[in-house]
Length: 111
Length: 116
Image (cartoon, rainbow over all chains, first blue to last red; front, top):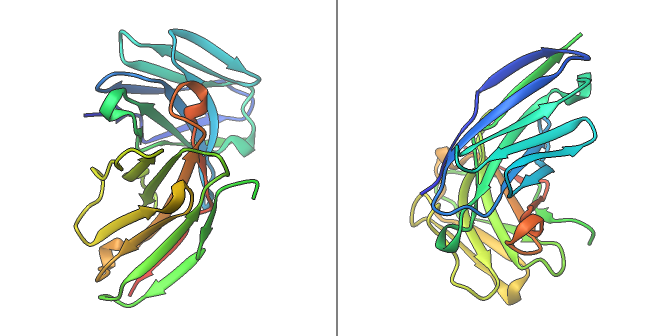
């Protein structure tokens, strides 16, 4: 099966850096995804990792360690509009290749 | 259309009634997912269609829930004899494939179901 853990809530200050962690257990591994979801809206795709290391996209970066079953999303130069839930999702392999989401981390950015 | 569409956007029904929720995925996307999300909660996986393979129904919470995908495109999620605990936002997503970044899912706006 698949299991994904993330912190429930985090707070941070505008302009700062925040790291949101995700640990997972999966039957096979075929990629890890991060999504952003603003209140009352559908999730939108942020990043994808399948190999170990850091993927950078502007203010957002995502890191993966497959051996540790661990990922993080790094948000730099935080803006008020970054207040949202951040969802970690994992795709397994073979018969487990559906996309499973963690419960999400609710990030509040304050001035 | 350009994105995933779902209808209706809102549905209010009485306990015991049947409801049908519709999803139109992005054209050419082979994978289609249904999730549900209760207020303040994460996404609960319901069912997954991939091409012509048998769907993965492992997330359906009871036999009152069923889904079809006709012609590899439009999907309908049916909930029979609705209960109050079925109240949630039902999200549909599609992806171009399942390998690599093509497996990233694009979500529709959701259907908010309220069972009175």
